[in-house]
Image (cartoon, rainbow, N blue to C red; front, side):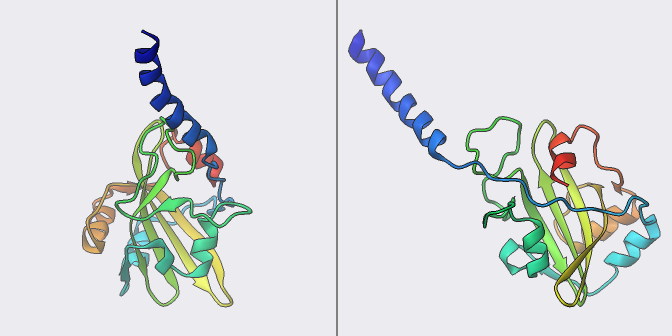
Length: 178
């Protein structure tokens, strides 16, 4: 009996010890989006540009990376597509982010991110930014959005009013992150 109990508990204790040793991911700096949202047509106009598709966070400009990096640390608070993140509110690995990039777009002085956010409810967020020299980030708009496979589908979702502000009220984590 004791051997069976040890055989069951030892692997579990090892997993728990490994999780205990993982350093929790810190919160990113708050991002202050304007209190008065831009109009639907302004969101459409923002996205009507020649964007380069980006599927890795590290390929984004430094101001964007700083906005999605933990305070006082170097880890990104948003995972690349296909990477592990907290899709639900069950935390198995505290070092994982709560957000995962679907894709981003970058043009001359504009950038957008479409990402999914886990927690109590899983949803997608579209965030729009302008970039000004020297390395200044200006948040323009963010809202809840339907998932999209590419920029064309994202534009279609926006024009069909499938992206809206404000974000879901149940996103407590999102509200505290920004």
